[in-house]
Image (cartoon, rainbow, N blue to C red; front, side, top):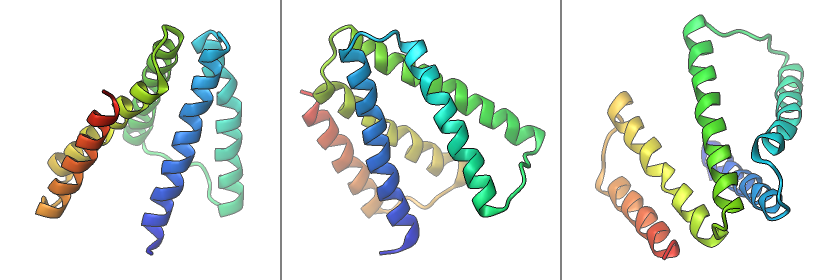
Length: 138
């Protein structure tokens, strides 16, 4: 297996675990914004440690700083929406697959913005992935 694919699998598992932690929080009646803020120090510490381990200084152009901030806004909205969905009684077996459809948005934008090639295999994979997620959410 190639390294990018293995890292993708690691991201898949850790995102799944992160989302499940949110389900646990919601099941225990946490207030979403407080719960999300509790994760910020851990996230920041992990990023700082990565800078030290990789011996890389902090460097971002103003444009990429804006993109990073926008990613944070979208991330905050998604975390709040997910926690609120669970708090209002949403079932993980329905909400998680629904959120998983975000891969169609990201893949579609990657194809449009970066002119990534569209192959029959990619379309089949996205279609099967989307279909599986829709089936799980029913």
